[in-house]
Picture 1 (cartoon, rainbow, N blue to C red):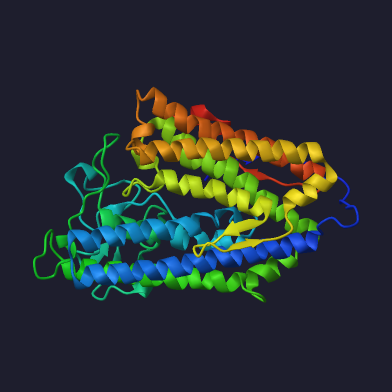
Picture 2 (cartoon, one colour):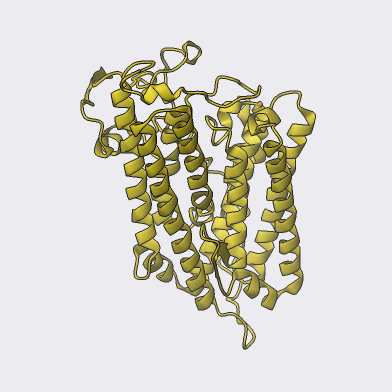
Length: 420
């Protein structure tokens, strides 16, 4: 993520609302309740993933591997809808790397194809292969990985050597273990790790016992990390306290900061436009599983959730209440209608991308060089996100909030820098 900021907004007088309108306090409480519901669902779906992984370990087969992969994809849905809480909520942003850091240098974890290479000037752990090496000496550092535990992953391997690409924990480490490398470039196909990589009796590619241990430790750690954040958003939790300490105006600014920063710098820029510019499948978010279209889609749904004040859970039940949309409509109906139309247009573009992927053309194929229709489908999502960010700025002005800064991205703000 780049440090460039987008859209510094001047402060104006704090808002006053007509009688009977939703109050800022009610809006903030509903925002907190939605966070709690989405993180609770993230925990629930991660536990279902653990059940599927345990079944894979007990009986490695094509069927149990497929079920574990399907459970991973389901687990991504509620989590991705929480990402609008990252920017502005420091307690979330500081924690997020534990569960969703990317991209990762997968050679840190397990075997890789020869095309991956054997070394990197930036990362001495590039091919450490912890699964194959119980003990390592790298860069003057000794690592005892005899026992692969959640503590080893979190405290020793995550960002080893202070290199961000050394991602040892979270959804993407688990994704790599379940799928393996996607060696298809921008051609059809995702990672294709065999189930026998987890079969200690009929092992392929060696170290199946340690691969199983890594997969189970990473899954247990994911659950505990998600439980931590779910507790933070429960009544009396630290995330609620942090938000409430900002006051009503500060809390509403936090909501809109999250919407604008995810919409513009993070999703439109770093996760989408950058890969489209480079036509590079390594720049896609869920690169091993070809699930990127769903991660982007759920981010867009998550932005809508916090603005419209509604969330539909895994059980089909809805958490809803007073929203920022209500406050904006009370202050400036034209801005409210404009922003709703922009959010709807972006969702429609994301649904078109999702439909294309479900029809057989994966996201990495869409961004491939020479795929004009696929490129245009993804570019429409970028355009929608950028356009809706401008209207989010107008909503900030309409509410008379203090200065708000949205995250930026070189791919949008300084494209020439991408190729330097």
